Length: 236
Image 1 (tube, rainbow, N blue to C red):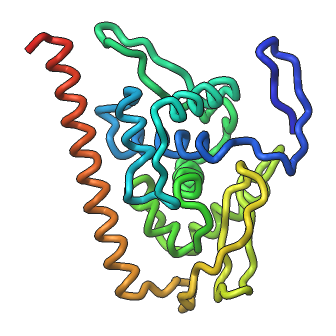
Image 2: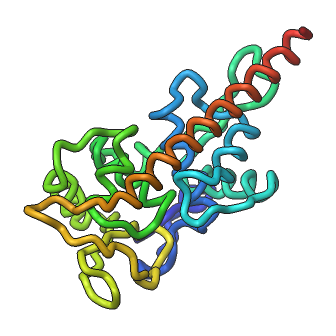
């Protein structure tokens, strides 16, 4: 695999070398998520992006990034042609937007949703991915998720997803994205699939509902921040 220098010259990179840092993965995942869930407030201001990166819901692990770390990660994504700063008329600051289409021109909406959730939450089962992509893209069943993941495993020129077989405390197959290098498999996914569907214990369902509520609260705070910034710009 190869990237480019600022002069456009190719730079060879080992397939085992991480393409993104963990911070860059978090920023890119947030941009993908907010584009789908809060389109009226996308692209994101630097403050909104910072808040999204440090959300306590729908994130694994929860991070506490400083504004300088988010800015540095954004610069890294710009260098890798995965993000740009948008200068909008009347806006006090440039806004942040992903350009995933530059890197993956043939990725589908469903695959993009899966990549987004994998960037934000790491290793997961197909059943978990189906639940957690619901706000981004609706999959009919787990089999559709698995089909999309299989295509991502074969994506050219490099796989986007790695399939992790059951074992080591995992009762079912799990998946992870490949952009942050080799990740040690974790003992997630204790549920047992039934007729192609991953069983969802009540505890997991409750956790998902609580995370959804926290996510909505975070988005509300982000909207309030946007309103305050708009009032400040208007001198209200």
